[in-house]
Image (cartoon, rainbow, N blue to C red):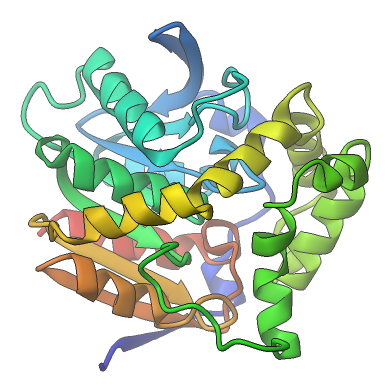
Length: 312
């Protein structure tokens, strides 16, 4: 199927993150949902919009996009789902049904649907969560915007056999992270090395993640329980039960409008093609000249796509 191409460049980036300026507009907060403390960062006023990060990141992945959305007149909430960032890291509960129900509880606790359904944006694993939540709690969601991810059990898998070098760089971790125990043995204590490699290998503009940004991601990924939590998401979602649940969700097409945007050095048009299978009203594009970490590599273009879509 056809899709729009959005050409991105260094002009779509922003100057390095300035905490002094950012924290005049935004603040940290937490809320407990069924005993699990969820951390989020909030700022701005107006109609709420909820941002969900992916692996191996946190709310911080949205730091460049958040002020642009607030400037457009939105109340912006960037959440650390369970196991991510500075939220609690319980030993279990990383299957999408549980995480989606917890997100529903979060939306209710903050009153985000007091005046109607809320707009939700996801990237990477945040796309998994955003889709599962929209499928399980459709009354919560007005519009859903998703960035650069495949949906396990729905997106067509790569061809069998030895993957190409390009495919291997993008997908090696999906099989590795499902192994019992070995990822913990090899990754714990080497978070800086892993993240340095990921941000270099999967980005076309790796300089947009500065040494200070890397240090923040290392901090949250090196916290007790963080590695196990991240792996638990992937073990559940990519396992037989998770795949079965995902395929069951796909039988009920989403009715709300969906925006699906991939990066040409990421999943490309795969996300858009996938969402056309599971939603009735889908539009989207592919960012040319952009890697997987879209909210950091092209925040202006990401914000523009979100604002244009959510204002319709």
